[in-house]
Amino acid sequence: MKIGMVGALALAGATAMAAHGIGMAQSAPVAANEATQRQVGAEILFWSQAQRDANFPTMEKIFPGNTIKANPGHVRALPPGTPLTIPAAEVDAFVASMNVAGLIVLQDGKVRLERYARGFGDQGRWTSFSVAKSFTSTLVGAAIKDGYIKSLNDPVTRYIPDLAGSGYDGVTVAQLLTMTSGVKWNEDYTDPKSDVARMFLEPVPAGIDPTVFFMRKLPRETEPGTKWVYKTGETNLIGVLVRRATGKSLAAYAEEKIWKPAGMEHDGFWMTDQTRAEVSGCCLSVSLRDYARFGQFVLEGGHGVVGKDWIAEATSPHATVAPGGYGYGYQWWTYPEGRFGAVGIFGQMITIDPQAKIVIAMVSAAPRASDRALTQQRLAFFGKLIAAAR
Picture: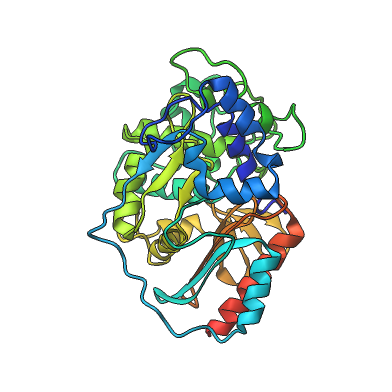
């Protein structure tokens, strides 16, 4: 099962970051040229534990990006609820064993558990890695509601015409969302010749989107809709599609459609490529409580930002990932018992249980990017938290 193996590709997106970004803190010591950015980005998977601890909450000091502004006058309150009936020592042991920096549990919008560690706190931001994919998916739902995207059955080439004549001919927006395009892709993070490693390393002609430049060269492997293969490059294409359909940056659209309606407390930071476009498959930095607010926003149906059926469709399994009820929706992982979630490498997670009205958000600096056993342990512990809340 590939749960949690998402964000490394987007880190390949970080390898081609430009030297200057929109909305960056002016004091951020951004690398002076693109070659240096590539080198820094390429090393993220191999950072030491000390580097992960230091850099995951401060990515804006290393990479360029766009700011998503919060509205301080309309912050959603997260009032305290009854503390969970789970031993504090058990929670502390989990936090320590998983190198967790922050863990929060909401039920009915109230905080039933909140822990911080590793020098992190409620005022800080932490990188999402592929948790960002579910934010990007929600922007697709908003673009459909707003009429920018006419239908999920539309061909991708309607919105990205420069993909015409490529393996994406005949692929629909829905198939891009569910990663069932049929386009061949290698997401082996240990192989320097894999697509994930090479995606942003080639020089791109002026005026050409870096994601489109790479993705349109990929061959067709199977008929669209017949095979699920995890491809972060396709989430980056979704970001291109949303930008072109709306005429807005992802940061601006997220500010309008997620940050303000969800009542986010802190600004977000979304890393960008050399064209100053957000790397939509990852690289979004958000505070722990705001990750939880996003989960609550989704749990509550999107507050009219998306169509009334969008959340249910997006969080239903459209592809089977592993036995036992594990699947994939529109950039959301689906789990047994009707739960669903967003997952990023090194232990970033949002898990939602609609029946229990619970949102769990976690940020971490795990020692390994992805590990099936660790993911199962995290989900099992989340199950304990949910059981304790009943």
